[in-house]
Length: 98
Figure 1 (cartoon, rainbow, N blue to C red):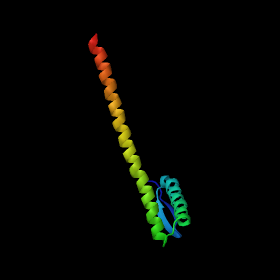
Figure 2 (tube, rainbow, N blue to C red):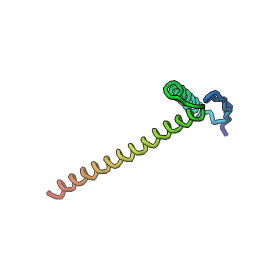
Figure 3 (cartoon, rainbow, N blue to C red):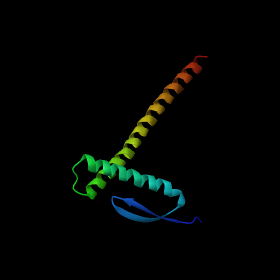
């Protein structure tokens, strides 16, 4: 069984102690850093009332990126399927001539 790792992450001027698998550490630290950078960007560019507003905008930004990737992937998959079908039809038409 893997030993758990205790880390502390700072997000929006709060410290969050976490107990995680060591394999998660890099991803969590990068995520916290990205949240911090985006929060600072929102604070500098928009009139925000409090940290909750900033964090809500961060959550919306990250969630919309995930959703858009899913939409893009779905569209790409559909396009690939259509091309493969067209290629299959072409191969079948050439094979049936002989």
